[in-house]
Image (cartoon, rainbow, N blue to C red; front, side, top):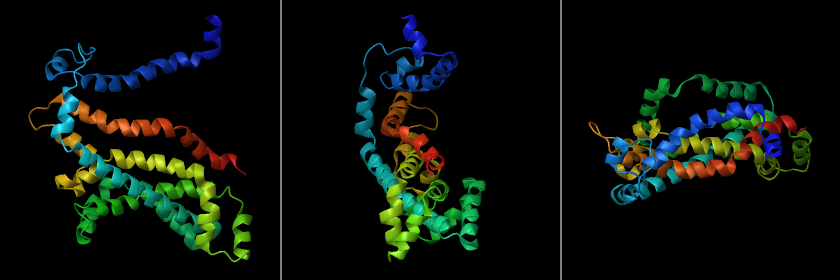
Length: 275
């Protein structure tokens, strides 16, 4: 036993373990609340449920448009992330392989977008969406999210700089078009950073509340996060239902993150390690 502890634990683990407990406690409270009645949550909020009560899940799936909300959220996430990745990495290609003053200025312009908070341009964005007839529209929200490609451009530029430029030059000499060079040569080499970008943007769009709450009005275009918001009443809240909706919303993205987390550090450090 002593040998096992010596080989598998270090002094730093003693400090990390309490921090993990602090971060995991809200998830523990969230999950156990879904198996309690409202009365039990009120009297014993942190205790284990006395019995496995599934009424909250039955009520959520029967009385809320959870499947429609899941479909809408899935549609927004898949379409938006696909556009963000393709647009962002296509924008990074000329910045790296055709460096000039204009392309470098565009990179600076895109990076300046990080300095402008979303709330500062909210009114202008609403007016633009209204003029383009994109309000209360799922395709309109996809267009809105697709404009958030600056992070993908930043990640892709750093990674592309580690790809030998001789590959691009040899393809040009062979007569390949820029589109063919990008999609058949450069893009397949970007797997690590592409996965990293997919992870970040998927978690952002799936969990986003502000934009859908402002730009989507009808119940037919609702998302999972909006359904959680609607579960909170003005004067009183059924907390077990609220917690159940939150758990149902978090579970898919939690599973997604568990399977994909190993690619985050790999993707962010790949550009520094390669070449």
